Image 1 (cartoon, rainbow, N blue to C red):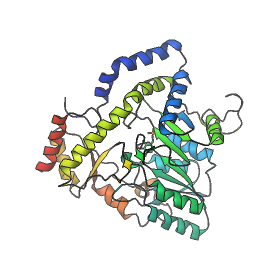
Image 2 (cartoon, rainbow, N blue to C red; image 1 turned 30 degrees about the horizontal axis):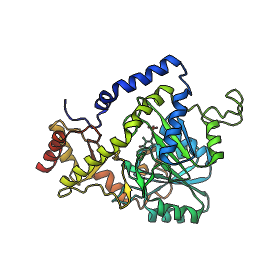
Image 3 (cartoon, rainbow, N blue to C red; image 1 turned 135 degrees about the vertical axis):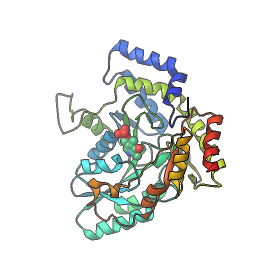
Image 4 (cartoon, rainbow, N blue to C red; image 1 turned 30 degrees about the vertical axis):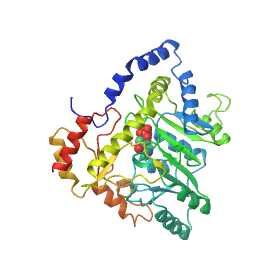
Length: 370
Ligand SMILES: *Cc1c(COP(=O)(O)O)cnc(C)c1O
């Protein structure tokens, strides 16, 4: 058995009894949709993140789209998002009819750059055709974005901050958890995310009681009194009870898993910083290490060498949002140099809590040996 990029099999083996038992309970009580495990999970996640509400849904993409719908984001609205991110952060802006405006990222943190954001806001404001509406701030690779700076800009221009914590769940700033930083925040339970289930899943976090109520309606066909009383256009977006059951057992070990991810990240950085640009975590920030990402202008050489030695590595992301065919006509897709440079130089190494020193030493040896 070689080293896995993310070893979900090892995780299952270590949690097998408890996960199997939880799934069996669902099969026996038969409430496959909106069963008691869903409510139990939502209250545990809200408590952990520190928000008044957690509303689960079908996946992290829906979580973003539902958040935008709940905040009335749509046609003629400009929504700012980093160009260096996973497609869903930008896709959902367009899905609700709004206009994505791509912002550059900070090369050290991979996250949305406040200076670039303000420059883009000024351009859109000068153009005068779109309402300045919202920012989608992404906690890329597990590191929360710079919310202190983003909130100042958001207040100045009356923008809604949506935290895309699909990768950031478990991250922190000054002891506060990711998922609590925006006006609204979303996460994903896709299997490869820091907290993943065995299929698709997502969640939304908010302190706003009215928005929470609206989200409960939006994710069940815009229901009123019940799902056959429809007061608005919504979606069908719910977390399966079986996935909630899996997540409850995985969430129980999640804090320990985060420690182990952090230990691996430190171990990588201690050994690799002499040769590579390693990821930086600002003071008072904690990453959930969704990815451990190096930068090198010679990444292909290193990735080929890893591959020859049976070690997987992946490029997240080789194409920026403004370079995607579907967004080729996007407004003001200039001054995105850091995003472009990163897409040409980043590569991510195996990262999961079930690592063994022997395996990681091999990764390091291959990378340092050329
Ligand atoms: C994975 C991901 C999403 C989407 O989540 P899904 O559950 O796959 O729909 C959104 N944003 C970011 C940054 C992601 O990494």
